[in-house]
Image (cartoon, rainbow, N blue to C red; front, side, top):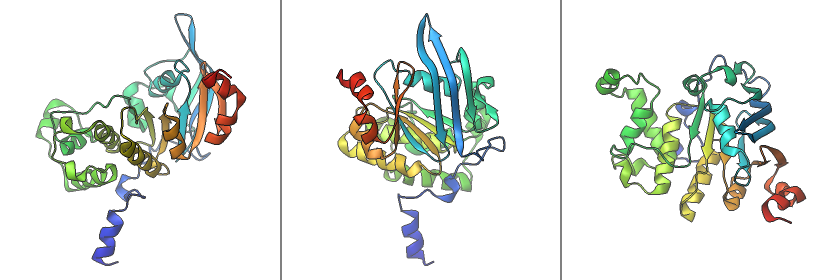
Length: 276
């Protein structure tokens, strides 16, 4: 392959670079193709049942959208997956072997589950490049962090993540000077630096321009396959653009599931959203 062809391959946005493929946790068994199991999960807060006998299954490499009205249990579901909330009953497994209900939040993150919250949490006083460096899965104690310098392989990883998230030209720009959409992409890039198997993305396009929404849809579709990606979103136009399977939550359980056309045609979904 000539130099020109190699350069064209590196600049393609429809594929992930080999180094960015997540490193498979030896304890993560996805031989049955399902990476996340939630079975019979329920949790109540002060008598209010936020999650009610929830059953949800996510395949390895799948892009899944979770939609539902306010109070449907979407955020609580992600809190349970990441260990922030313990359910009253049910089981939650990461692959065949990892019981998430017996693991702490750091253990779950280290096992390969990353979460992006609705509001981007980047280090605004640092450059885009430094944000990615700080997100590397390295020793985060004070002195090792202060004394460490990126190694060649880590610099390459940073370069390729910048290319993937579309911020190569902003690498030395202070993160606080980025647009809202660019901050969202940077935070996704920070998660990618940790090479997670499962990405949980909460309302990624809130406040974005139409152009930023299009680029975000492209990015999430690109990440699927190498990663399992679960997107919680309210914008139905954006959900449709992802061309993925959709799960509708209502009152803490699955109301409907399937393509966007299928769930929109479901009379139960129309009743919940439109009061029909």
